[in-house]
Length: 264
DNA sequence: GGTCATGTTGACTA
DNA sequence: TTAGTCAACATGAC
Image (cartoon, rainbow, N blue to C red; front, side, top):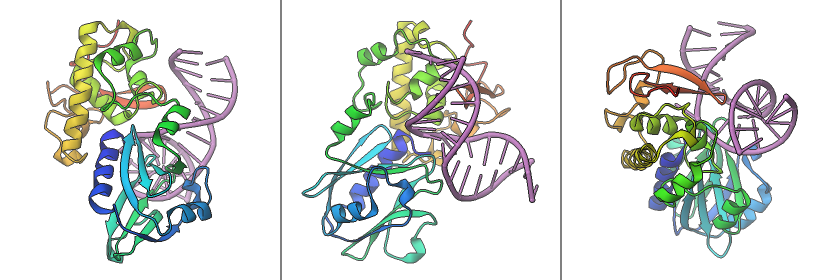
């Protein structure tokens, strides 16, 4: 689930619930998710401080801690945040929990343990060190987009999902963007003519933006989205044709062969 | 009850 | 530079 729109929704959720309150206790329930820091270090860096503001780059959520650096949250293949007071609202796979002085707490749930909790002095440093591409929504104009994809021999789907090219797009949203742009996932990036690239760029923005407006909740997505039809043999929401499953770079993707013409 | 697939990334190989 | 495979992990579907 957690691609750019989902993480953006988490960010807004954290902003609306958890800022400017004293962290009274830090519970690390599973240290496997910690990357490059120990339980004790994390506790020390958070205890008695406040969450001040947030930032997002691609699928990474950064949380500024007053008078200190930034907490980095990545959600892996399964993960979300929940703010609650009552134990009955506590999710099942809490890996980190911050208890605030107002009696509420913020939980980071990560069932499959493929997420990461890290610490960085500044988000910019992390982005640079990891060689992340520009954020797909915030930091990508058409010229940059064209530049990043031009000359790439890889399939357009792989290129869209490459976090070092563009940050934030995963398997689900790359399928969705390509479906909306009527481009086949296996088309080579470098073979897309400028007008196609423009269509793709606009679809990218539209899809991510709309998904965020729907709070990244598939049930609220507009009817013309592919997501809920993502399955072998399901009906294309545009032409009614049969959706096909394809394999690409070890991932499975879904296409409408009628709307998305295969490359020659 | 085994096998397979699943939205993540990263390491490795060719 | 790129694609393919595997591994990390937990869980549900078949």
